[in-house]
Length: 360
Picture 1 (cartoon, rainbow, N blue to C red):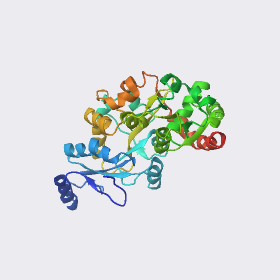
Picture 2: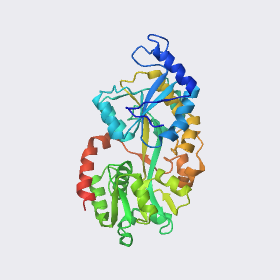
Picture 3: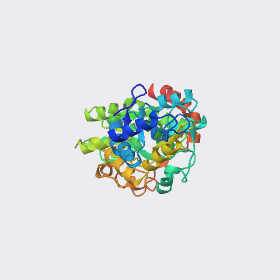
Picture 4: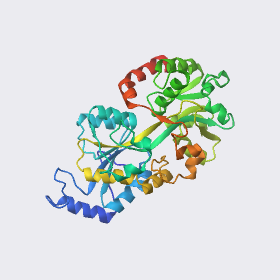
């Protein structure tokens, strides 16, 4: 069930929900956290897609295990961060699930608080990149950038080569992400690293991608756009996140995804605790469960998230797309981007991309 700010519904069984209502209805009772929130409920701010699957994989099992009900609010990264900014970190949210760039931006404004293994023990059982310095909260999933392609038109080696986008033989039959979307920043940094002096050599990246622009049918801004272009035969390939391919590959479409030969970057989705969270113990418990092998395996199977728990089981549907990369993306040559480099320059890079690349 999708929860919105205007219509909030607790994610719990009828019995647990009834108990929670009794407890929270008793002023000063054992369910009172002392600061206006209930120790038996938390509010989680999440992405607007895959909510029903997230409910099944994470929320319902968490409530069953802990008795803590979870109220989910959804929205885009930008909208939810803006909400938190306007509230000065106190928007009535206990846990915010948000992509890394927006998490880092919020940190610069002191909108989130840090925590450690004494609060969330499962932090000790996840991949090193998931607890890298620079973020107040851990990654609970990640997204790999690469190329989504029609297997009737291209092979993996062709799709993995950035020079594909410069090939006039495919003019008007290629797509590339706008930098404003997650894949866009990863792609720009991949080009910058491959053809320039590193992932933040934006001048070289924009000159290169701008030169490809006549071959690009569309600089897309949503997963729906690029998957529709591919399945309708309008394009033969597009730079895209690996998650875009999972359903297409499983359905038997002549589609595959491959990592780039060079310039491999990934994004992370992070579990953050706002500075004004009312139920810290509930937030710690939720994040600890989210990082558990049980939850990470279920999320991979049901939601399609790439897991960060070291002992999580990776389903066949994911390995059919990314192969062994999911077992250790760092060993496979993937890297994350430094928020200290991206966040201060993000607005300028987005403006320049529209002017120097997409408009050509």
